Image (cartoon, rainbow, N blue to C red; front, side):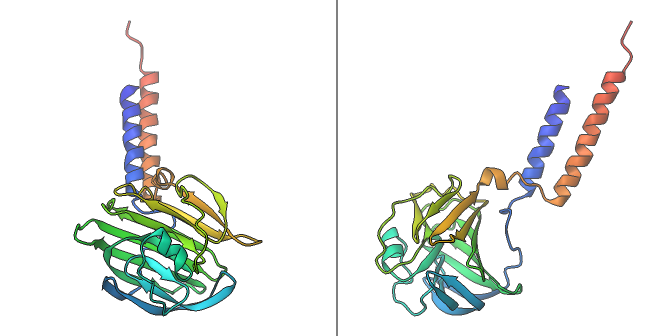
Length: 251
């Protein structure tokens, strides 16, 4: 029986390992439109994205993991909570000093997917993150890692313009309601959102609901081929157990 239990546990571990990306993840990155270190540009979404009482058909994106909803502003490259609150309205996906290529996929109507794929400046830690923006104002962030960067990381959203500091949140702590600004500033080597999704949903009376599908949950959702492997594996384990139970007892 012990061998069967170990066998089943190994199958479960293999299935979890097979799902290396967040549950909500666009594998088709689309087209690269920006690359390098500390670079930014303006790009179109293909639809009007509503946020903070305005609609935006264009956004400013930089290689450090920020989407700005007021293109053409000088503070685009800020990486601290103070920058997030002081400058223009912006989304910090996983913002720190990285050298990346930024991709855009607008193949689905009413959805724009931005993906940053590169490495930590002067360190080389690989990083891949993603932000999906929808025409109803929803945002879904995905963090594929695979490394944990050495530098501190900023993830959050702000209406900008000198917004009051709401204090840091625990983005890996479940679901919470917030005003127009929230963030988590991860200290050195403490980023804990790899393989997770962050869902940002506009509230009916303002603000947002923020929910996290944590790495321990996202990593345990098998792909279809993993389900097939589990089915076969547990069938074999069950057959082994039945044979053991029906084996004649020794005289």
